[in-house]
Image (cartoon, rainbow, N blue to C red; front, top):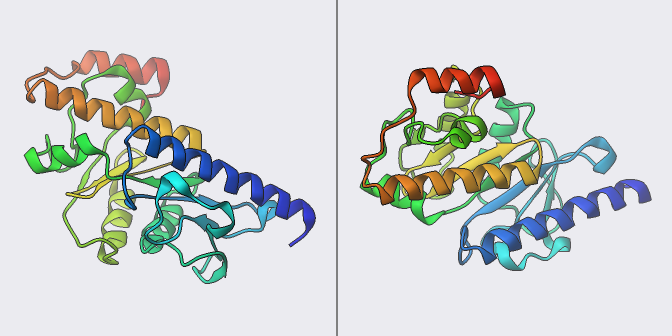
Length: 225
């Protein structure tokens, strides 16, 4: 890899470490739960960077981030997260995605235990920023952590969605979100977790936005709802 590509990839590694620490410090991830990946451009060496299996996102070593090729083959670093297959299927199904985040965010996991709004939408459209920034979030039925079937489930949801998806919710495990940058993906995750917290605080009794209000958000902000 050229010096330019190495420097470009190191910048991505540093950003993954920063985002992981931010999520950990704010309680959006804990222990060794959760993972982060970024799709690399050819100028950054190509393939993907992904956090190692059983790594704590709060204390990542940039040099130990797993670097894998487009086919999933190891190119460097520690052993890739066991969710690598899921991440690769998301990138294949959502070409605009540049990164994927998965956490075990408390309120979202609690929501799946209490019962989601609907299987095709875990939350009703409660706030304008949820509608504008998050969009629809379907539930993925429970499978054991690392089960390859989860990747098939998520790929099918992406392919069949009426509106482009940016997130899914893995039952009892947590949200998986993707976007065009780590900053955007983290903001989406925060908005989704906060909406779940609000929904739980209202005991599921809050009225959703009206159809006319949602249509206004579509018109004004191209909301993905």
